[in-house]
Length: 131
Ligand SMILES: [Zn+2]
Image (cartoon, rainbow, N blue to C red; front, top):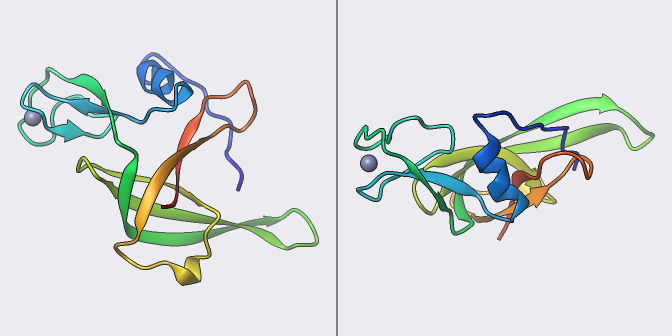
């Protein structure tokens, strides 16, 4: 599994502070609804008063696809499995799935969030793995 270089900007700095500490941060409104990290207003009640709260790290597999890259070795083209997971807090998130055979996947399987870096000087990126 390869994770490309990711750099923070002003809009993503707080999120990547979380991933550096091993936390997947979600947005949470005063009513307790969770929204995905890029949300600027609560996706349930439209409140613009969003704070940050760590997700527990569990999710359920919603869907997936396989993307084939260029052949970089005799082993053939690199296979990337992209999945959509429904986080236990409600928001959906898509990312790579680490170390799983796509032929063995089924909707409803349990996932967990892990963090990977392209290199030491890049941001930690959340990916999914089978729980
Ligand atoms: Zn809300």
